Image (cartoon, rainbow, N blue to C red; front, side, top):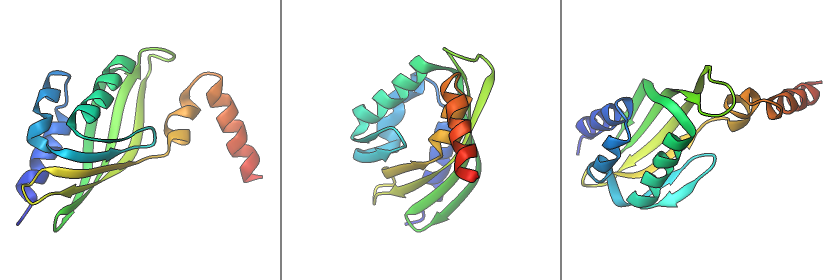
Length: 143
């Protein structure tokens, strides 16, 4: 099976993600899909949807921009930017750069979604107080 159509559908889903579009997760993810990022590890559509609903509680104007996509068999690798504004702390636009490993099942649905990004550099260093501590620790480790 060639998964190009499924990969394009997934990229379009993320680049146009909204709270309303979460209702379409069953068209994208398998019922027992696994999802892992630096903060979560869940299985199933409802727990995955809960992660995204929580995101909308924490940030304004979230947007994924997929910069690179690689497809080999049932596996895909996406390189992306995630931009947003924190509801608390700084209202400045923030950007997290990361990558995702996707594995499609035989039906073309996402069976595995694994995000890779550096929470310390991409998030913690940008927060008040904690950011200063993280930058100091990074500096101390590099001496």
